[in-house]
Structures are given as structure tokens and as C-alpha cells.
Image (cartoon, rainbow, N blue to C red; front, side, top):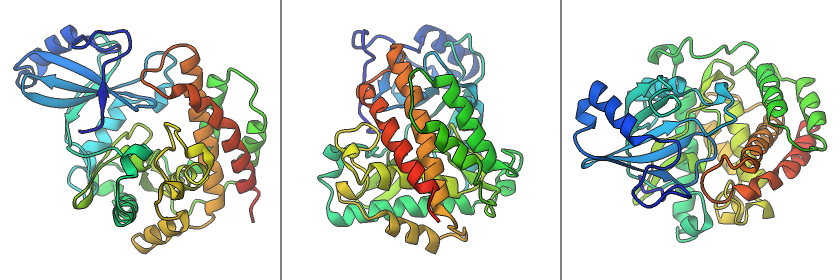
Length: 358
């Protein structure tokens, strides 16, 4: 993985970053997977994680990736390591590129939280203009289209065929999404948020039928949750499956368009750690072109996307508010978190406009 890695603030280079006890981890690996503990352990926090923490772990001459929940204020349903490990294991034989899952540890006593290990995949996480500006116009277009082809491939996987028939409850998925994110908002709320309750109520009062329900949904699909290459252009792996379930695939598409067209086509994108490097302002194709590509490669009826974009705005506003809350408590690692709280109000405003569309 070529995503830049940094040592956690307050830790000297080479020491264990916050959230990772290397001595206890080494003892656990020696007992359960000794082939992964053949040499000294070292680790670095991979920069850019917004929720679950991701570490680059060196075990002797081998490099692996470790995922664990964030430090403090953990909303358990959004940080379930077992679910994330299960879905990437199930998708391994499909056309959806995922890292090889190696180990799941549900024992919180080892490093303070459940975690899992996966193979390191070579590729680039494109999340900033400094990375995407050097790409040619053709590379940006191909990368965007590869992103949509991969999303379509995910939504075409039959859950039962990969052992995920019981991975979620498709019936009532969209209504539950509204209730779930409303509940997470209440648990993360630390300041006045004008309009967000109105958006929540408008979504709850206009839930569409959800004719596409029952597909595997990633839950946070976007360009910087992919490992990609540009020579040739390819998606090497889809990352960050913490919110995956069975549901309506338009939820993925609506959230992607929220990142791409709502944030990525406005001044909010400039230098922002969530939206910088995305969307038309960064020289990528328009949201309409993404929809056309997706529709041409899947059997999903794109339907009332305006409602799903509104849901995406609400969901992303809640996520940003949760990150803002953890930042105020000093529980986020890495740069850029001080700006995320400023994204909540514009997302709410756009969501209200979208949910009112006919």
C-alpha cells in the first residue's frame, strides 16, 4: 500500500503508535499465527483514516495491514471488525477486488479493541489534488469509470452465492438507514446544527419503495476508499468495509454523488481532507457521466436518485459531526480533522434541496 504512513503524534519514530500494543500483538500472533510473527514487529498509522484506524504493520520482512476501531466514542454498529473481515473474505473469489483477509481477533484484551489483519495491496489511495493533478485527463476519466465499473460489479454479486445471504435485512433498509443515522447523530451531537432535524424528518416521510433492495452495499464507496493504479488504470482493492450490509445499492450511488458532485464540485473541495481531489473541480467527469456508466454496467434501476443523494448528505453530515466531536475530545489521529466540522452545514443545506426535488 503506497498510501503515505505517518507515526502517531506524540510517539517517537519506530515506537508503537497510539491504539496498538505491539508486545501484546506479537504474543497473540506467536500463539495463533506464528508464521506472521517470524520477526520483530513495527507499525505506523496510515494517514487519512476518518473512522476505523488502519496501521501498516511490518512483521520481519513482511508487510501487513491492521484495522481496529477508533479511539474512544465508538459507535459499535459502525465499527464491527467481524463484519468487515467477513465481507472481504466472502468477496475474495468474485470480480470485486479486495485484500486477502488473514486473521480476525475479537479479543479486546490484545490491543484494546477487536482487530483484523489483511495482506498489503500495492496501489495508490487518491484523495488529494497533489495526487490527482499530475494525472492526464484520460487517466482521470479512466479512473472514474473503473470506480463505477467496480461499484456495478459489487452490486451484481448474488449475496447467497458468496455466503452472505444473512449479512443484513434488506426489507425496510432505507427507513432503517434514516433511523440509524438519526440515532448516531443524537449520540454525536455536541452543538446546534440548524436544519439537520428537518432533513431527518423529510427523509423519514418520503422513503422510496427500494425496489433494488437485497444487494451487497459497501456503505461508504468513494475514490479514496479504493487502492488504484494508473499504468494501466485499474482498481486494485476496495477498502473500508465497516458499513457494509445488504440493502439498496442506490444508497452507495447517492453517497458517492454526494462526495463527487455536492462536495467535489464546490469550493468545499479545495484542500478539504474528505473532498480534495474528487469530482469535476479536480478534472474528473461529471456526476451525470458516472451515473450513465454505472447504469450501463448493472441491472439496477437508478430510480429516484435525488432522495438517495439527500440521504447521502444526511449520512455524511452525521459522519462529519461524529469526527468533529471526536476531534474536540482529542481522539482523532492524523491531520485535517479540524476542518471537517465546517462541512456539516453545507451538506444539510444541499440535502434539504435534494429531498424536496420532484
